[in-house]
Length: 111
Length: 115
Image (cartoon, rainbow over all chains, first blue to last red; front, side, top):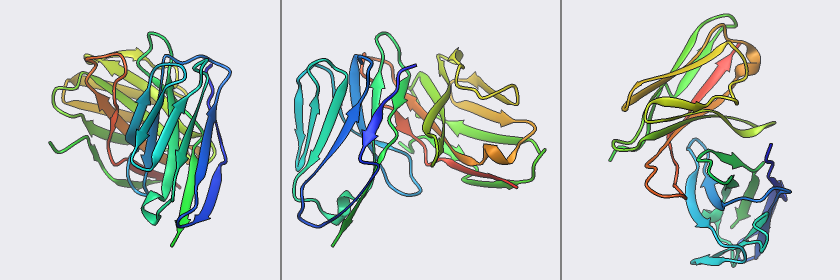
């Protein structure tokens, strides 16, 4: 069974601060996705990373896939209240369409 | 596009009753996934279909759970009999498997409470 551990589980910060969320596994994934989920809604895809060592930027969000494709990080610069939500990483095994989701990081950005 | 549609949005029932959750995937998508989300266990895959055929149901907790996809535009997840530990938010997601790294589009979920 492929497991994804996220840290921290909860994070409460002030507007303007930077933060990093980690997603770790002992398994290798062919790709890794990051989703954000707001209360009362389903998760929404932010990014997909595929290549070991890959870095992708989405405005103030920077995503990195580990060289060995076992871990990933999400860095948010100058967090805003609109970034509040549950961040989920999800990995796809080789040849498998189903995703394994991480335990989630609940982010609260105070104005 | 209306996105993935789930019904009902909220369901409150008593232990022992049958519960049926419904999902309409995005038109043109050929894979459909059912997930369950709880605070304790996070988001867990229950079952997924490709071209209406169940591919992986290893996440279905037990025989009380069953899922069907009679056609490309409709799926159901049934729990019979329901138990309090089944209380969770159930999500349906769909994707168009045109590539290797498919984005899953989630519905708004059904919040199930079993008393």
